[in-house]
Length: 297
Image 1: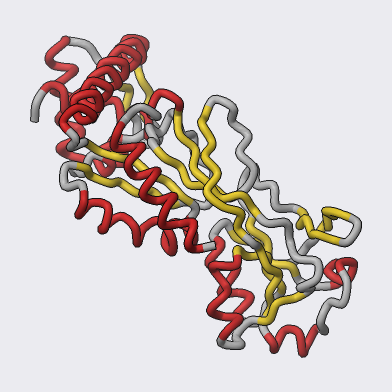
Image 2: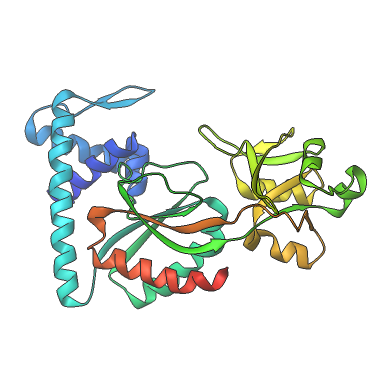
């Protein structure tokens, strides 16, 4: 492995907070990633990382080295992007992230076709319903449902994503069918929650405009697919994107609740660090995905 590749390993280890995670991101075993870090430390005769059984931190000189190494890598990536724009054949690694359900259903199926068209590009897709730090995690494109808040990132809206309130027929037979939004207070509401989650209320479209409803229930999870599974099993009412539950509604496994006061549609789009916008491989995937994904809503 070259010195430059060792730099890349070091940067990803620092950014992800562990040798195992950094190595995995670089498709290396923890042992190989650790050896790359040791090679750098031996090369300079300094300790770059403090390692304990519980955590990994940079030394003072390690942090300074990380800042410079990251700049070197960013400069080389930008140079590679310039060459790719002239050659017409962009190359390199493209890092994507998306929420679990959206990523599985909408983003992941696009990747093989894109890579078949652009053989020099590698895609690394990371799925999570938890918030991620796009800049610190080195993400090129983050697909997102909701209202983007970070002004340091470029937002590209792709479509409005309808949301539906759904429940299993057995649940509605047992608990009753809500006739108006206030009835939700008496029901088991299945919530997507995790640290810093905002889903402690549902916003419904009413004849008087959007209305925030405080909802509660005994079940919450940080994985949207789990909420859909709970709804299918008859445990309560879920607020889900239409693309996740449309087939269940058609098959009769789920029933839409309060169809005249649906949840406010979520914006669907991508977030990109501004400095990545000129990278041809980022633009290529963003345009490719936008064309395909508009057909899903």
